[in-house]
Amino acid sequence: MMIKIDMESAEFKAVMEDTKKFTDKVCESKGWVYHPVEDVNEGVTMGLARNKMIYNKRFCPCFMVVGETKEERKAADNRICPCKPAIEKEIPQEGKCHCGIFCTPEYAKANAIEIEAEEVAHNHSRGLTKEECEVILTHEQLDGDEIISLLEARELKMVDFNLVDVREWMEWNQERIVGTDYLVPTTSFYNQLEQIENQKEKPTILYCLTGSRSAYCQNVMKDMGWKQVSNYTRGIIAYSGDKTSGE
Image (cartoon, rainbow, N blue to C red; front, side, top):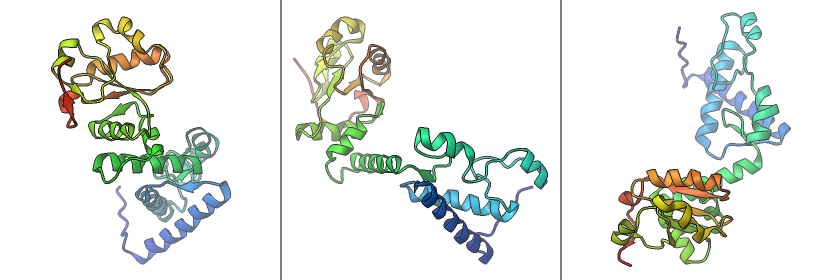
């Protein structure tokens, strides 16, 4: 049976307020902070408040509540906030709980920077900061807007990386992204990779026509010890930035 809660009712609003006080105390006592995206916190708090109204327990809203009776629910070992897996494993190892509301300060800061960096890269509202560039370069998959923003930042000497085309010479000669540093064709990849064999510590971005060949080469390079290799997932066919051609 589906239980419907009136979110505008005085009862629900009161439970929401109490639940917010509860999560505030959890953060304070554990040294945690809230997720940098407020919608995450609001959604989880609403779920906790709902479960408090229905079961008189703040069961984790990201998991089903098992058991029809109080005794059955206790025997089922349902997660009660803040749950044991979050305290003992998720937050220490991953920086956040499964639901996302509770985070370490370090995770929240890094996540906030990443969110801001992605927004700037896609909206072009301003140039990326050095810190934002470094965050984006840790992504295994990049889109065209992010590459454009990173190339702009590299021009300003805020960040350094290699942009590598893994298509064939005839494709490279016909059209390539302005700022491409190396051509390392997939068909002779191991031999041509010697060009940058001594640059395994430098972040590397790969691209091809559609993102397929570059994804394959990305895995090869990671297996060979490259520290950070990103793939342009959609390839040059979808690139809206500057391109050039010829030798």
